[in-house]
Structures are given as C-alpha cells and as structure tokens.
Image (cartoon, rainbow, N blue to C red; front, side, top):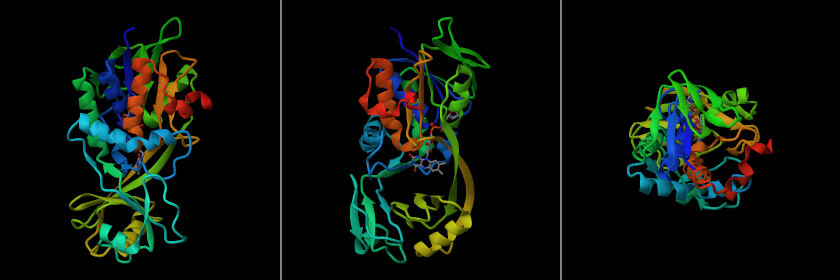
Length: 335
Ligand SMILES: Cc1cc2nc3c(=O)[nH]c(=O)nc-3n(C[C@H](O)[C@H](O)[C@H](O)COP(=O)(O)OP(=O)(O)OC[C@H]3O[C@@H](n4cnc5c(N)ncnc54)[C@H](O)[C@@H]3O)c2cc1C
C-alpha cells in the first residue's frame, strides 16, 4: 500500500517526522502556516537534556535522545549541535544521587568547567553527554533532509481542516491553496494541534504553557556549558550572546552578575515569550487516533530533546507498520 503521509507543522517535531518518514520511503507532504521552526521552536532554550532520572512513559525515549541526535548528526552533516555538557546545582540541600549519564562533582571540578564563576557551589550535577542545539537550524536541516528524500514542502500554507472520505478515513488536509491529499495525516502543530483535532471530535489535551526566553549581550567565553540553577537555565550561543530561560529579566540580570565574574557589560537584548505545547499529564502524545483512521498525533514538551528519537519511531510506525513499544506510554487513548 502506498504510504502518503501529510505532516502538519514544520516545527522541530513535524520536521523530524517528515525527514524520517521520507527517508524510510514514504511519500511525504510537509505543510506549515509559516516557515520551518518559526513556532515555539524558535523561542526554545534548546537544551538536549537526556540525562537524569528516567521514570515515566517517555523514559525509554529520553534515554536514547543523545544517541539519536548523534545518528541524525551523522546523516545530516552540519547539524548545529554543541556537546557542551550541562552543570546543575541548587543553593539549598545536599547533593542528589547521580542519575543515568550524570556525575556529582566538587567545587574544584566545577571551576575547571566554568572558570568564570564567582563562587563555585560545593557540588554540582555534571552531565557530560548533554548538549544544546540551534533549534531553528536543526529544524531547517531536517526539512532540507526531508526534501532531499523527495518530500514536498508547502510553507506559508495554513491547514484549515482535516479532510475525511465517505468511510471516515482521512483523505488529506484542506488549505487555502486547495486539498493536500494523503492516506495518513500527522498533526504536529504544537499548541495548535488541539484546535485541528476538535472539529473531528478528537480531544487533544494540550495546554499552552508560556515561558520567557531572554537574550543578553555578554563577553566572549563567559559560560562554557549548559548551566541550570534555581535562578535560570543559561548558555552561551555566540561569542557575544547568552540565552536564558528564567522568570524576570531584572532578577535574571542580577543573578547572572552575582553568579559570574566579568559581567559588568552584560545587558538585556530581547525578551520572547514562547508558548510550549504542554500535555496535561506532561508526557508526549504520540500515536494513532482510533476513532479517525489515518489520523496520527505527535505533540509534546521537551520536543527539542526528543525530536530525533520520536521522528524515527513515528516513521517506523507509519511506514513499516511496526508498533513501537517505546511509544506505548505515550498513546492518545490514555486520556
Ligand atoms: C523558553 C523555552 C525553553 C525551552 N527549553 C527547552 C529545552 O531546553 N529542551 C527541550 O527539549 N525543549 C524546550 N522547550 C520546549 C520546546 O521548544 C518545544 O517542546 C518544541 O519546540 C515544540 O516543537 P513543535 O514542533 O511541537 O511545535 P512548534 O515549534 O510550535 O511547531 C508547530 C508548527 O505548526 C505550525 N502550525 C500550527 N497550526 C498550523 C496550521 N493550522 N496549519 C499549518 N501549520 C500550522 C506552526 O506554524 C509551527 O511551525 C522550551 C520552550 C520554551 C518556550
């Protein structure tokens, strides 16, 4: 049977699904209302945080997130990933037990990793395998990879509805430019996924979860790893630039100055409010919708970390007809 997959949404999730499905031999159409990665993917802190406690339905996927990134890096040379490791600590309390991929390090080791700290913490959790990405760059590279495997990419094309045939099976999606036909429709539209499912009677329990992202001007070489404290998630993305996920720019600026030396010239450049697609139970929603044959959902938080793994697993389900046990805790019918 010909697999013609229409993927709605060219954020990091939809781009990864489209890339992996096209690479696996499906006929793929990727459609987005705007440009690749211009949704919340553009406002992500983009930490590939694959270490730490691994419990819950997505634990298996998270456990493979780093190796899945390294696989995509090999397949798509030039993928903008930095394997800097991550350092986490809290002002209060003792050191936790190290989780998978983590070590507890002392103050002297912390200073070798982040030499510009004013006062190193007594302990920190060091995850040497963690990294971070240019999330828009990764998304664009996945879209280019999908194209190279024959995918059709329709940008600036809003989907207005999912079309069903007389038997109730999906037949494609409606857009202002006409019907885009397909035998399977993957809704990977981030926070908009719920609105696309509603007219079909499909409830997608995803809530918009706003989170600010600040850009600061900063001196070169100030920060070397992904730093996570009670005040912020912070990393250096260019010689003169930091990005920080935190609550308020004033508090964040004060926290950066009190945490690092040489921060007199640090100043706020911009504030963005990214709206994350947050499933009500916090876990990914990935899988077919039983009531609408041919409809498939792919929506989650922490999607920058999970996208390569999820994209490959979804493609195997859609193209090879394999039921992936790694996705069994993520199914839409759990609600
Ligand atoms: C401040 C902040 C920090 C974060 N930090 C991290 C982190 O460190 N690590 C991590 O893993 N995750 C992080 N996240 C979460 C992560 O960014 C998101 O989980 C991820 O970007 C979601 O990707 P997506 O493809 O599902 O959604 P989106 O990027 O929003 O993509 C959805 C796409 O669907 C398109 N679309 C919507 N409606 C339609 C329609 N009707 N027709 C056609 N196209 C449509 C949109 O245009 C958009 O391009 C963070 C988020 C924020 C805001």
